[in-house]
Structure formats: structure tokens, C-alpha cells
Length: 617
Image (cartoon, rainbow, N blue to C red; front, side):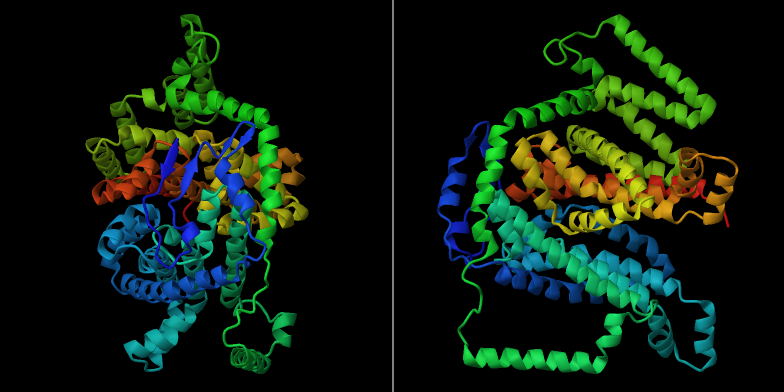
């Protein structure tokens, strides 16, 4: 299977990169290496530069997009703060901006503005605005009443009250929004490269992936990750400075020394430009020119151990992915599992499901029993075999029971939109793939987060790994999955998991570490074992934080659908990608809104469930 982008890069690009990107199963096939990959490896020169020009181009895009997002986000946040009646509409718009895949709203932007870096700049600004809006409203809402009253008693006008009292008080939260906006803009660099951005790091990732240069692709992704981590540490430091005391480095770098250092750097730059006005001052060789051996080594591993990677892929495909898609009734055939499902086996399966539901009913209540029955039915019929009226009715009833009539009507309207546009099969494919990815992320990420919460050494090891996974562009996650497992749903599953596993790790660790120490001590003094303390005290108390991690995991998994479509899925992400290739703005927006609908519905359901379980103060 081959998926090809239909975008023509900008004229300023090098001629060897002015070809559309191909991600094809022929890149690595069994014991042979793709001819194009070998040719590209052989044609590498030893005088290619490193990534400095590309990094500066990426930084330039971020520096242009961030001020636009900051100003627009601040103005919209002030509007939501000053006009509470407009806040629901504004929050709904923010939900759409954050959950609709960037590929979906790129189509109207391309129609209006054509290809080029301007479209990438606009897309980055749109994607990066919501964090600033939310943090602005949050910061202004949290201004203490005593401070506002003190400003009024001092005779401040409304404008003075806002700019000299409320904004300075909310500044730490505004700086957090600045940090998140910057990171969001940086995460859009590859999308900007797809739609005609100039030669930046995002284009290097795409170009390396197209040439099957896996070493260069990973190196390019690490460059973006390092740049993102550096910017993150710098921007979040401004937000934390008022709260924390000055560190040793801050005491050494006084404002006067900082100004002198900047003036010295500016003077050196002027001298260098005067002495060598045309000089690039870059090393003749870069690390990426030495990655040819790494590419050959990686492709050799894929060739020599193809039997192992194929075995892992087939095991997960036939034991997890296929049963969720077509159910046990469809998988239990001589051609797939080697045997047919007999009536006695089906009866035994349903008896086991009913027994498990009975145990849940006695121990955890009717909701847990109903969840077991629903899971047993879906596992038997599969997502594809479940009748759509049953599915829609069940979700609508669940939404009504958890969050009320409005969310129930919202669920009915969203599913009706998907049905009338002929996207039900793609929706089912998205649901089963994201469901499995989220469950595996919760299992693996929750275990790692629990381990990190009880071990400082493990926490220190996981922190930089999570930073890299969270800041690395989404396209980069396709590289190792595609390299080892070729195209297919299993590759998409691995890529989604790599991107979505960070929230459960971090939120589980944060929730467990911040459980009240006196409660834990009381449970331990009652004779509870460490396992009992964890399961019966810490996890229940940390449940709101863990549920927030679940929410973010679902959002991350859904946001990867459009990216995973590049490796062979047939879900809503594929519909968005195909519509982008055809410049079909209508279908692209409908498919993107369908993904946004799933994300918003999951978000509202989880929020309502957390509110029900959180006791009133």
C-alpha cells in the first residue's frame, strides 16, 4: 500500500527534495532493502551541513506564530472573563480548535492562501491560541477578591484596575499560557512543512522519512525535541520565578551581568558579520552525514530479524486487533485461529461473561456489572458487528445518566452527523483502534507511573524520556514503528501508543505522590500491606488526577489518527488525509469534526464522572 501526499513544495527548496513524500510497504521487505533507500544512502556527500540553518528557520516560524497566538489568546481570554455569557461559546470554539486535526482545517487555508510558509504560520497560530485563552481566563478568575477590592478602594479606574492590579496578579498563570502556547506552536512545524514551509527541521523529518533514512529521521526528531525542551525550560522558568526563591544561577546572573552579556554577544555578532559578511561559519560536516552507517545497521536488523518483528505484529493483529474489530465470532475461524467457534464454546463464553457481571454486581455495583456485559458483547461481535442503533442508544443513555440531557442530545446529534455523511465504518475503525491504544497505555503507563511514584530513581529516568516523547513531533513516532513493522494497523497502534503513553505516566505519578501523607500513615498503622495501601487508599484518593490523565490519553490518541493514516489505517484520520489530498474541504471538515466530536464527548463524560465522584467541599 502506498500513500502519497499531493503537495508541491515551495520553489525555494532543493531540487532533490522537491518530490512528494511516499510511505510504502516496499521500504523494508523481508530480506531486501529498498533500492531507493540504498541509492539515497550511497549518494550522501561528506560536506553536508548540520541542522543549524533548519533549526533557525524553525525558530523563526515559532517566533512569528507565538506573538500572534499570545495577543489573540489574551484578547479572547479577556473577552471570556469580562463577558461570562460568551464563555460557553468561546469554550466550544476552543474545543474545536484543539480537537479538530490540523489536516482538516488546512484544506480551506490552502484554498484561500495556496501553498507556502504563510499557511503554515496561520495553522500554527490557530493551533497554539487555545492554551493562552484558557490560562488567561483561569488567571483572571483566580485574582483574589481582596486584591481587587484594594485596587478599587485606592481609587483605580476600571482600566487601571485591570492593567495595574488584575493582570500583574494573574501574571504567573499568563506565563504558563505563554509556555504552553510556545510548545503548541513548535509542535506544528512538520505540518507547516507539509503544506509548503521552507527548509526547516519539519521538512528534514519528512524528507528523511520519504528516503527511508531512519537514522536521519530520528536525529531530526531529536533536534526538535531538544529545541522544544530548551524552550520549555526557559519559558516555564519565567512562570515559576515569582513563586520560587532565586537559585544559585539566578544570584550569579544578575540583571546587570545579563545586559552586559547580551551586549557583548551583540558586539561579537556585528564584528563577525563585518569581517566575514558572506561566511556561513558552519562546520563542513554534520552529525547527520555520519548516519549512513546507522541506516545500514538498522536496515540490517530489520532484515535479519524480520521473523521476530513479523511474529510480534501477527500475534497482536490476530489476538487483539482483529477480535476487537470483527469480534470473537468473526476471528474464530479455521483460516485465522485454526478452529471454528462451536455453539458450546459460545455458550461457555456468555456464561463466563454473566458470571463476571454477577461478581461485579455484588462487589462494585450495577454500573460495573453493566460495563462488563457491554465489554463482553463488544468482544463477541466486534466493533464492526455491533448494530449502530444499539451503539448510539447505549452511548446516549450513558451520557444522559452521567452528565444530563444536553450531553445526551449532543451525542445523538454527533452520531447522526457521522451517519448521514457515510463515515460510520471509519468511525468504528477509529473507535476500536483508539480503545485498544488507550487501554494498553493505561496498563503500561499506569504501571510505570506507579513505579515512578515509589522510586525517585525511576522518576528521574522517566522524566527526560517523557519530555522527549511529549515534545517530539507526531510524525517522528511513525519512524520506528514503520521501520520494524512496515505499514498496517499494528504500526499505527504503536505510533499512537508512543504519543499517548506520557499522560498516564505523569498523572498517575503526580496523583500518587500528592496523596495526603496522614491518610497513608493511618492506613499503614492499621496493618495494611503496601499493595493494600496502594489499591485501597492511594489510588482511590488519586482517582481525580488519574481520570484527568485518562482524558488526556484519549485526546492524544484521537489526535494521532490523522498521522496514523499515513501507514495504512482506514479510519476517520484516513478520511481527513484523503480529503486533504483531493482538496475536498467539505469531507475534510466533516471527518475532522467527527474526530473532534469523539474527543469532546469523551472529555465531557470523564469530567462528569469525576464531578460525581468528587465530594463537595
